[in-house]
Length: 258
Length: 316
Image (spheres, rainbow over the protein chains, first blue to last red):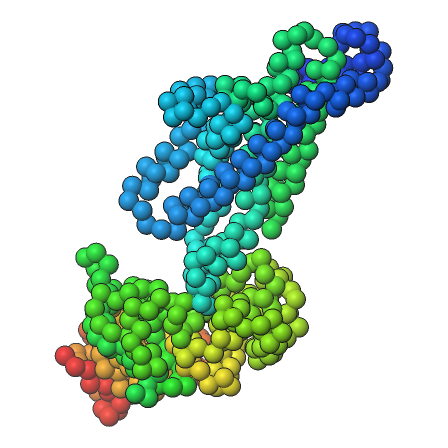
C-alpha cells in the first residue's frame, strides 16, 4: 500500500515537472489583464484575438505550415526512394551509404544550420524560407529514411516480385504496390517530420531573414518582454503539435494492429 | 515446336557453387510437371529460371517456341504462385486477381468480370470484396492461383504452393490443384520436396539432386524403375544391396533362409493399413512393408525373401 502511494506521488511529481510549465503557459494565455503573472484574471480570449490580428504572427503561422508541409512531403518521398533503393537493390558499400544518410540525426541542429549558412553564403543563396526549407529536409530526411527502411521486409520484396511477374513495370510497382503497402510508415514519417519542422527554431532563425517561421516570430516578440500574447502564440504552437502527435499515434497504432 | 517449355543445357552459378549443372527439360502442353528434390537440389533455382527471376549463366530457355532466356518476368508468358502467396495486402481479393489484367490494359468492366469468373473456378466467388487478411491460408492459396491463372499464362509456376498449409488441408488442396489444372488446361510446373505430393500430382515427375536431374518420367516409371540410386531412395524408400534396390513392399517373410538371408527385427511401426518394419541382416538394414495383421515383434528372427524380378538394377 505504502509502495503504491510512493510510486503514485513520484509519478505525479514527474508529470508535474514535465507539464507544469506548459500548463502555466497555457493558463496565462487566457489572462484577462496585461501581464502573464498571478493572480489569474480570466479566462479571456483577448490575447488570442491579438495574436490572430497580428499580421506578422499570422504570416509566420502560414509560413510555418507551408514550410512544414512541403519539406515533410519532400523528405518523405526522398526517404522512401532511398529506402527502396537500399532495401531492394544491390549497391556497392550499401552499409556505408545507409550510415551516411542517417548521420545527420547525430549532428546538432545548430551545427547543421551554421554549416548551411556558410555554404549558402558561398553559393550566393540569400537567407530565406527556401533556405530554411532545405535545412528542414536535411534534418528530416534521415528520420524518414530510417522509419521507412525499417518497414521494408523480405515478404514485401516478394509481393513486389509478384507484381512484376504479373506485368508491372518499376514505376507501377512503386506506385500501385510498394507505396500503398508502406502507407502507414509513409504517413508516420510525414507527420513526424511535420512535427519537427513545425517547432524547429535554430535552423529557421539562422537561415531566414524577412519572411520567417512562427517560432522565430515568437522569439522576436519575446525580446520585447513577456506578455500574455506570447503565451497565446505558444499555446497555439503547442496545440498544433498535440494534434500532430495524436494523429501520429493513431497511425502508428493502426500499423501495429494490421 | 510443339513443346510448351524447352530448357536447353542451363547452368546457374552462384560464386563458386553450381546451383544448376547443365540441366535440360521439356514441358508438354497441358501437362503437370513436378520438380522434386531436397533443399539445395536446384529445383527452386530451375523454377526461377523459368519465371525469369534468375538469369542462367549458360544455356537457353524457350517458352512457346520463343527464346525467353533474357526476357524479364513482366514480359514472359509465365506467372508464379509464390510459397507465401505474396498477395497485395492493401487490395481486395477481386483487385488482386484483376491486377495482371489491369497491367495488360484491360478496361474495368471486363476486368472485374474475368476476375469473378476465375475466382469461381477456384471456388472463391464470394470472396471478391474481401481483403486477403480476412481469408484462411487455403483460401489465400486459391486467390494466388486465380491471380496467376487469370492472365492465361502458357505455363503456371508453383513454388512449394502447399508448403505453408497443414497436412490435411495440403492433401485436400493437392486434389483440387490437379482438378483445376485439368479444367483450365494450362501447363503447370510445381516445385516440392514432398514425394507423396509429387506422386499424387505429377504427369511428369522430375527428381533433382545437387543441381542435376537424376531421373524423370511418369511417377510410376520413376518409382518402379528409378534411374539412379538417389532416385530410388528419395522417391519412396528402398533397401540398397550393391547395385540393386528393393522396395519395402517386395520383401516377404519366409521360413528358413530366404534369398536375402536371416535378419533380426529392430523396429516395428504400425501405420494403420500396414506395418513398417526395420530388420537388421548380416550387413544390411532391410526396410520391409508387411500387412497390418502380421504378428511380429522387435527381437524376432525371420527369413527374408524377394522375387528376383522385383529387384531394381541401378547403374553403378
